[in-house]
Length: 136
Picture 1 (cartoon, one colour):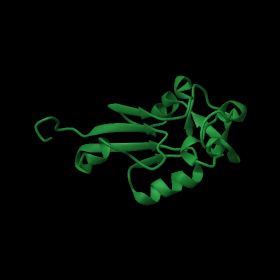
Picture 2: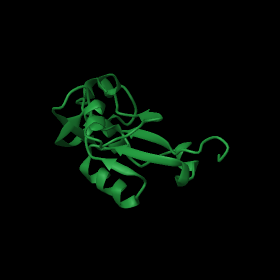
Picture 3: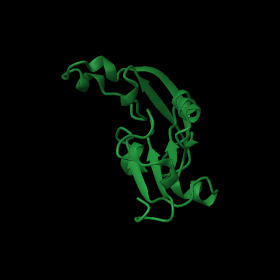
Picture 4: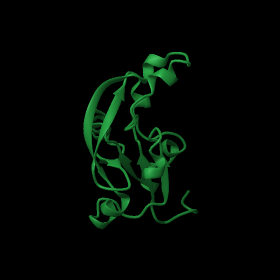
């Protein structure tokens, strides 16, 4: 890796529940700066305690606003989009998509985070936001 870069690379992980995964988890920390975007306050606190990178406790969106985050029984399926249970019932284990909690979250834009120096350069981005990718 030393031959590839003398500078650190940066990863913006949008929808960072459970922390960084492969292949990023295999890159030694000396080569990678990680910014974890996670709007669920419980998960954001856990990520911060784990020390996997800088935690940004907002949802990214195309404008600054407030949205409802539906925390589902299977938390990895949580989204700002309300689950369509009548559609999802055609699939096995549909109750995992049911919202067990609704919380109001703040959104930011990537541009605003950059202007406020909350993020610097971005070399790579991972996005896993259950349908909100285009709004980011």
